[in-house]
Length: 415
Image (cartoon, rainbow, N blue to C red; front, side):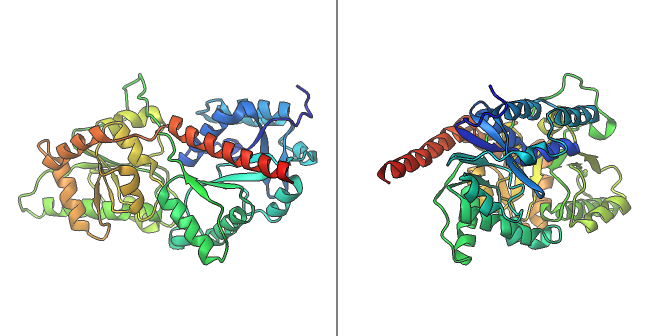
């Protein structure tokens, strides 16, 4: 294959994966989706990289070498250094790809990551390069709930959505709730959104490590509850910490009260949650609240499998991968009463209003008991759960791409 080859039937964006690997950031749910798309389409695609200083379609040989780097499992700082060195060897670190001027020739450009969609001039670049983008929409939270996002993120996301609306050949949403939100934004913006489809992401299976020797703060007990995800404002850790403070107050008041279970918080500290950080740093929970930080799947798996429930009091979500991961592991979920959780939870989780702390406290106390009827009923409901699969995801996506390609071919023949 020639280094200058430009004949792959598809183009796939790897911008997010490249900068995440370069920075050594632990993979999130969005990264897993990007990797799944890359793994499925790599053999038929060339890479596209969008950067604030450059945009490029990479030649076939360079693309395939880069795909191998991105699909290689990495877990340590040493792996990050190796990735950077390999990128330099490919000539990508200092912008060699900026010199490439390969045309898209009307090919589908698969973009699952959102990265770079707010870069000025992207729509014009798509037009000049003859690209036909198919975007995956994750959520519109920075627009619908700007109070939970970093400063300026709402404006950047508006730009991303307008780029999608103005350039998309097709739209894929991770949930019906997200698709409705996207269509509502387009309508309010006075634009016509391209018809889209819903394709739930596949379920990520957590595999326990063979090494069961876990640090004390990560050991599990029969009354553990877990909350999983970056500690940020919209994840609503504040509700759970308030619940635990009240349970501990009742225990210390002298009144007869049941034992207080333990809350294990898994995830790095993020943004818009200074009040949560202050509670974690300053309040004495007496070991009943443990901040474990980000953990690899091998350590998370046994913790989750032994938990009484996953707690998910989020105020806004586009999908909710932790909910599905917990149910896939046979672990009950107590979550916010959000439309998307009704959709993907299929009637299985316990859904509660986030405004009612008393209901959350009662449910947590109930699920902590070995004889909990509510927990047993949720376990029974799991038997009818249809877990989202990557097979179903790509059956839908492949058919959609095929339809878009066929439609273009037919129009070309007519013209």
